[in-house]
Image 1 (spheres, rainbow, N blue to C red):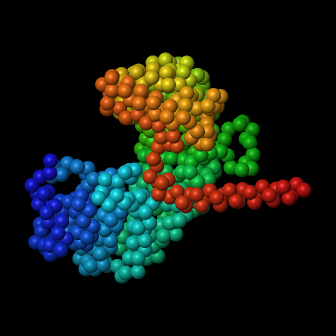
Image 2 (cartoon, helix red, strand yellow):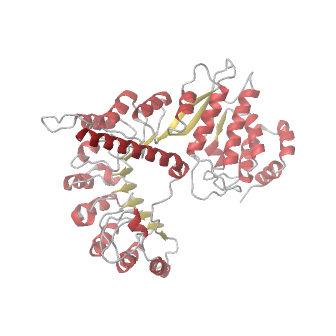
Image 3 (cartoon, rainbow, N blue to C red):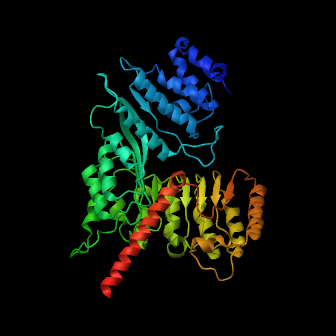
Length: 511
């Protein structure tokens, strides 16, 4: 329930002209309340004025938008374009208007969550890439203004850098002289950059405060590049690391060593072991057969999040995972792309048993789980009393098997979300797995709808209407990919063109 103070704030900010004229008479401790009311009502004009006259030493966006006694609604999942643009414009106004004494020392713009459906009135989002572009462009514009002796305002930000905004980010992070706004990067996502660009921008961003690093999709790294990143840049406070596919492959042309050891992998493992705060590691689509103990065995801190999807794990790798310290701390685990129930049934069960008290999210996509495996899978999942999300798309399961599995899943008290595959009954006879996107999309929609209704009815009969079950055929919503899809498409086309040109030259040389 909203407090009377918040209702009064709403009444004031709903009249922008009156709000502007009244600011001089408003107590400084009321500004945060007026800001949240303005954001809630999408009063961008008032937000800009509030930021332009911010009377406090700190501005923390996430804290201001979060639940409070005055207004319990959490607005951090509203990446409203109008409001966020007004925040940055207001910060620019503050710099330009307060050329003498100014109180604001730090602006924390982190903590905004990107979701598929915006709840703000305009429904228009400003994603992480757009927020990076806007903030960096504003920093660059302010670099032309003379600086005061007071020093810059520290701005904390989550940056998303691609080739499309690389230049403006570099200019914002590395100004030629003193700057009004000094960027501090807490989380960094990179896509569609070459290794040289990535290394350059990370050096400028500084590694001392970086907590999360995501290098994804179209950044082509090999083990030599990863080694260079970890040794030359260094990340002493890093808590979360995501590396792209094939990041542990040796550099092209590197000769094999006499003892069969990979010096780059050994060095990378050692560098990771020196990180005192690393708790999240994603290395999907890297070939790590027989290497998991070396990679994870000497880490200083237990991992809470681990993504080993499509890493070609061996029996020894699975045995290490089931026995290691990390197993009893895991909250999020992705083992997609491995025939777990078929090849490692006892080890897989032991791993889930040890993770049962902490595991919240489990992903088992394209794990060759068949009807005959459902009993074993249900038994392995039964101790997981904290599990909230289970994803097992891409497995060849029939409607009958799904009903058996759903009946078992109803016994998990905290389960709230299931992603299940299109039943194999809905595909033509003889369909093979894993499927490509074209084959995946060619199923009997009417038959699927009937089975989905039946599974939903099963949940209702079991009193589990709190569980949402769905089949996102082409994967879950990714706001970052959605926002930069056009640029990624152009990048892929260029890469395909380059590959064709190289292939054509190779053919000419053979002739």
